[in-house]
Structure formats: C-alpha cells, structure tokens
Image 1: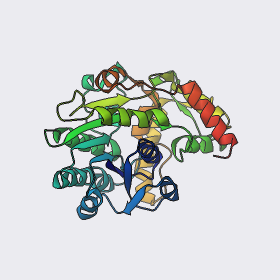
Image 2: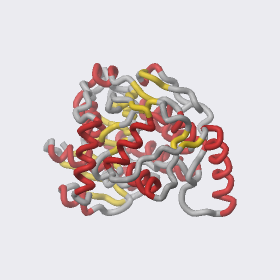
Image 3: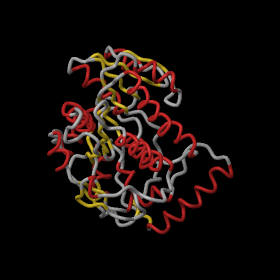
Image 4: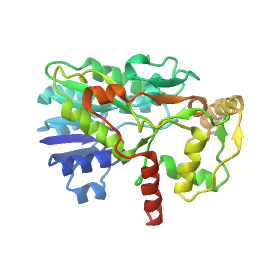
Length: 332
C-alpha cells in the first residue's frame, strides 16, 4: 500500500515512516525540507508547503491512505502563520483525499484542543471533554478548527480519525526534552505551582503505535471512524517528578525551584506584549497558555482507544527513560 505522511521529517513523522516501512508499505513524505534520515529509510520525499493546494494534491497522487502529521507547533507566532499551516493545510489534505479517492486519513491532533484555562482533565476520554474556548495560543485554536473539519469529513468515501498524543518524548527528540535540559543546565528552569499536578506523556514508540492501531481498524463505519482519541502512556505522574526523571535521563541537573502560578501568568502576559513590541527573536520563556498548561492536571483515559482500535502502550515510562538514557550515553 502506498501511504503519504505529511511532516515525515519530524520526530513523530520519522517514527511513523519507519514503522510503515517495516510493515511493508511504500511511504512518501511531504516536507518543507529534505531529510537524509528519511532517504536512508527508503522513504520518497516531496518538498512543498501545506498551504499550497497544488503541491499537496500532487504529493497525494496515487496514495491509498494519508497520515496527516505535519503542523506548525509551538507556543509563539502569528495567528495567520498557524492558520495557514494547520487549518488551510488540513483543508488542502482533505481536498486532495477527495480528488484522488483516498479512503483513509489518520490525523495527528493534540489534547490542547480541549484547553480551558486552569480547568483540569483527569481520567476522561475525548468524548467526555468539550473543545476549549477563548484560546490564548494560536496553535491550540487552529488545531481545534482543523480537527473538527477532519472529523466532519468522515463518511462513506473517506474514513477519518483524530489522535491526540500528549507530550511525546524519547530518543531522537530534538525539541521538548533537549530544550528542558538546556534550560536546566543554564539555571533557567522553574516548576510552575507546587508541581503536584499529574500529567500524561507519551513515549515515541507508543505514539506511533497508536497511529498504526487506528489505521489498521479504520474503514467506513468503523467504531473509530469520525472520532477523536486521547493518546498517552496511561501513567500520569506529578509534573515535578516527571520533569526531574526526564532531566536525570538526559544527564541534566534536576529542578527544585518553583514559581507561583499567578507570577508565571503575569510574566507570560508581559512577554506576549514585549516580544512583538521590541521585535525580540525566538519564543518568550513564558506565555499565559504555557503557565496554565504547566500547573493544571491533564491525564486521560486510554479505555476508548483500547476499546475501539486495540491501543495499549507497549513501552512503560521506566523503560522509555532507560532507552533515553542509553541514547544520550551513546551520543544520540
């Protein structure tokens, strides 16, 4: 089967491409750049922008299914840049599926689509949690729009499913954990609040496995068709413990210092005004959305994903940490 993976050069994207190749599929990745790691796997690559409808349609030609994983992520940037990548890009993928008669679409979403200020989510499935409102982050706002359009597109001709993996980590990550370790080494990392709020995370192999499980069950009328699912390791931990276990695996100093939520929230508001006003580069160290995320319990039920497409996390957090530690020691 020929499968198109959008964003195949990213952390999860490479895991998806690798797993699909191992399963005997012909894989093509649609990226903005060229990735030698994908070439080494035997993955074909087409360069282009998601917001370019013609380029997306060209990339999807001949595909039997699509894993739409590409997105503009992060906590900072203009709303339009997120809208073009996440909403317009997803609309272009849906249009390409219709144009080429592609029957299956697995969409990578995010739990952030349900974010509501400091409202906790504890042990619930996606069908029990409404979409968020008044998003203070364009990433969450645009992903919510895109996810709803993907699910609305589900039907007899195109079966769709949306997966919401929570905080993906593991060997090969170039963003989340390395950035945490860098800040810890520089003495610039703080825990927001008391650090006792439990949060879910997802080891990279489990995140990819959830996509494969959903894909294997996805057909018109399937139990998972037209639905969204939270995905995680199913092992919620206090964020203080989780953070320090990840840092220890990276060989970075642990963090004990904390900052009150109200202080972090006000700092985020100041940063959001100062960065564009002063034309500062990079992302601000704090935003209001980030402060809310860091101090609020967010952990989910895996029962719906297990029931509808058999997802079970195969790598525990303890085993994942050992793999991460070994990768760091090996220079990964």
